[in-house]
Length: 222
Image 1 (cartoon, rainbow, N blue to C red):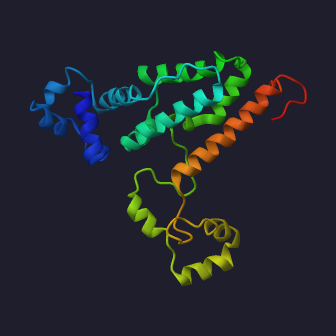
Image 2 (image 1 turned 120 degrees about the vertical axis):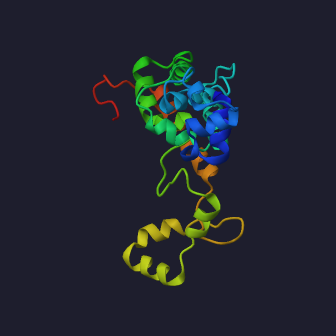
Image 3 (image 1 turned 45 degrees about the vertical axis):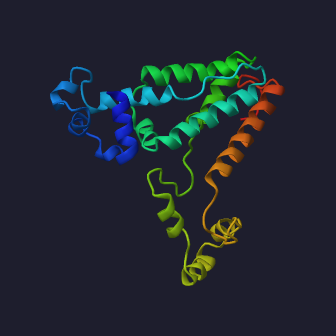
């Protein structure tokens, strides 16, 4: 049932998923589903646990940076297959068993490779949603159609002139990248930007770990 619900959400989006639509796919009456889940929220929790199970387990090696990076990018691939899952993750008020197990395993990747509990605590705050393969980017809409978003991101000449006058720094940064088609200002390569920020974060974590950083040490970097 849960895998059928995941497939339905993948095809039509989470907004169109209902107990009735799922029952139709399964060929049962809607009331039959309530033997397995209490309500739609319970269904969504179960669906999350299904897709969390698709994230690759940690690789067996000691280099913490590679282990973390591979796990995060595996999570990102999973969430890109199930684009509805990000919004569901963001709206959960309690951790499901699958989410708890993944979080526990993620923390363990640091602790088992020599990170102290104190640093690991702050690292988890810094990583945030990136452990799931996404992060809130500037002007980001997780449910936007990529093709439409790319088209909407191209301003006309009048808009560019107005932006240059009112928001010169925003325009300067937004127009900085030249992409494969030679057109500037069409938006960013999401995968490249995600990996760039992830590597930047991991470099900073490694630096703190190498210096024996602790939040209790007088004069520690904050």
